[in-house]
Image 1 (tube, helix red, strand yellow):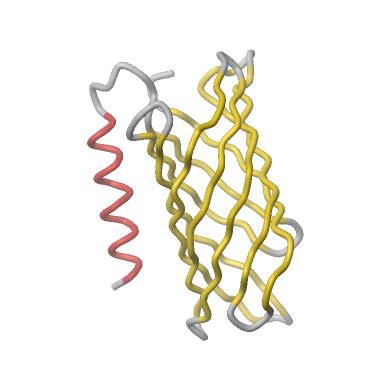
Image 2: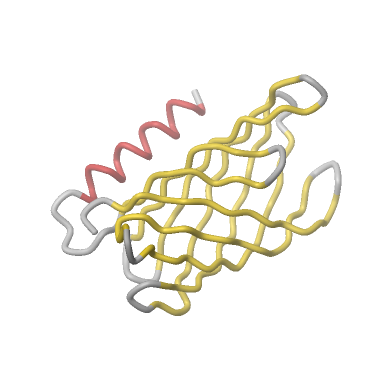
Amino acid sequence: MRKLVVVVLTLSAMFAAVGQEKPNLGVGTQFTLPVVFGISARYWTTPTFGVEGDLFLFTTDGETWGMVGIRALGRLAAAELAGFYVAGGGSLYFPDRDTALSLCGGIELFLPFAPSLAVNIEFGFVWHQDAGFGMAFGSGIHFYFGR
């Protein structure tokens, strides 16, 4: 059921982005090395506010686990090829249904030789239900439609 919700939200964001003057929808991947990687969809509802949905699969001790997360994005600074944002949200891990909250800062760079691609790097804090507080670090790449 939760996977269906993620798919419906992603498709809704894609259809809402059609016909927009600026690129609002980016799809790609987010990853935290060495164990967490997955798909990601970002939708900027305004030039300064957006949402992101993530679906990760990862392996620990030979077992495959999953995570679904949603975050709010706030762009604090933007230029033609770069921007700085903050992101906060929550994640639900499967199969144990553990939860985590995160608050990160991120830098997004649009590649001059491929303007539809944006590379991001994030850093911040995470709180996990079982592990407590820790550092968060990640990276990703998104393709923005219409850019």
